[in-house]
Length: 328
Image (cartoon, rainbow, N blue to C red; front, side, top):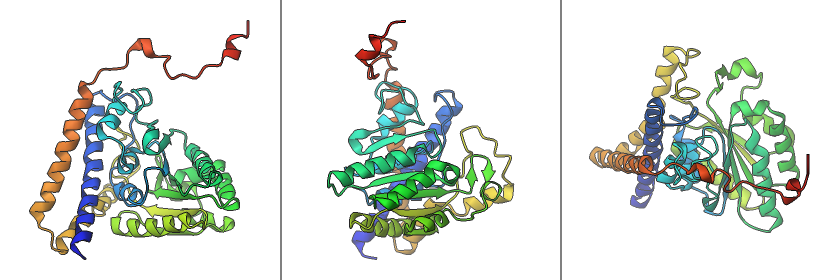
């Protein structure tokens, strides 16, 4: 690899660590009772977010799911504002009103996360249709888990995306579980990519824990979408090292399965590749340390920020004068 390419991968190595440390901090704060609700972590799945988002422009739109911290950070959202939102501070992306499962950063192209499984797919198709109708070169990207394929809206969205040749990238993070249920227990279809065939949508199933593979395949898929070739479905086989939510005892997993997942850590895999390419171990340690300090400092600032004023609870809430005119 050239030196420029090595620098590129080092930057992405830092991105992986930023997400990993950020979510580790979220987990710690949740255990301490500082995070409202039940945050869902993407620990172990960071390569998918970083590899895909590396190809996106600021004007491209992204829809994520309840496990979306990594996607949003990889897209470029401010790390302090994201943490502030998760812990319910007024300086958060949505002034602390959305929390972990409803992160939105419209200024950066992040148009929504949803706790409704598969609820983000149709929204992403709508954004893709809007870009197409306006003659823009922007694309829409939507992340979802394999459990979403059991919802009717998944198939409805694939059908319309294919019919209208929408500029949309479907990214399935197939971590093998729909909440607590293994793929084998809830579906007779082994690979999500098989669902693309009836709609004639190009697709590929890849190793989602290898950042270099994700980066290459996502880049090729996105290039085709921008060229007007229509939608693409990228299935990334990956693993979540954490539970379905913070506090999940994971009794549905064996110790052997958990140990095997640790061996496929995307950060360690990229680290080995960089070491083999001649990058000094001390340099990689420095990258990890810098990312750690950035996240911890941002977390401290977020925690020091004020909570939303209860008097502002009606701010930014839609209202209709017509409804107010209705009596009774």
